[in-house]
Amino acid sequence: QVQLQGSGPGLVKPSETLSLTCTVSGASMTNFYWAWIRQPPGKRLEWIGSIYYSGSTYYNPSLESRVTISVDTSKNLFDLKLTSVTAADTAVYYCARGLRFFHYWDKGNLVAVSS
Amino acid sequence: EIVLTQSPGTLSLSPGERATLSCRASQSVSSQLAWYQRKPGQAPRVFIYGASNRASGIPDRFSGSGSGTDFTLTITRLEPEDFAVYYCQQYGSSPYTFGQGTNLEIK
Image 1 (cartoon, rainbow over the protein chains, first blue to last red):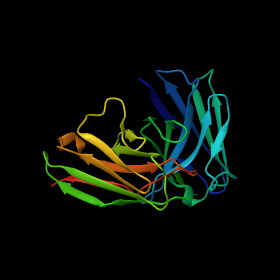
Image 2: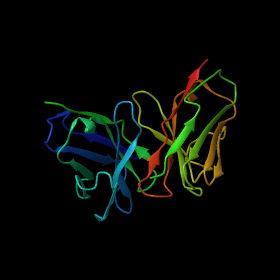
Image 3: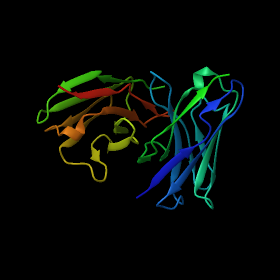
């Protein structure tokens, strides 16, 4: 059974970079897409972007200028970096498997942006 | 960007009853629609993809229907474990977007 676990700081200062890691266990990353999704308080779930195990990336245009998703299949993990964060980036961040829809998710990690 | 509108926002039903959840898209997504269940403290779980295909391990009391702009998730006989928030998501057009959710609660 595929399991994903996201990790990273729960608090980030405005204008800094939010960095999260998702560790995959129970299955190989090969031949699959991996994704980040977030949900700000009181708002809808938002697809941030997806990455193929080989490194090809697909981003939400609304975030593309600030987002980088990378993958390290040797360590069975993929990362999210979101630059120049503001309070609007406060959200529960989920990692998941999939390009366009998502079969497996982690439980989510709350990241707050505050000074 | 395609906007998904789910109705109702909250649905109060009793175990054993039938639940009908709706999702309407602002433009056609063909059959590129998924439904997810989310419970507090748990990872979201895909229930339906391709508008009508049950994901692995999903009971057959769950069914999805629709195409184009109007979709329905039906639960024929509610079990206690079915009470949760359900989201629809379209993947017919990037950016892939989600509905605002329907809270299925015990009456």
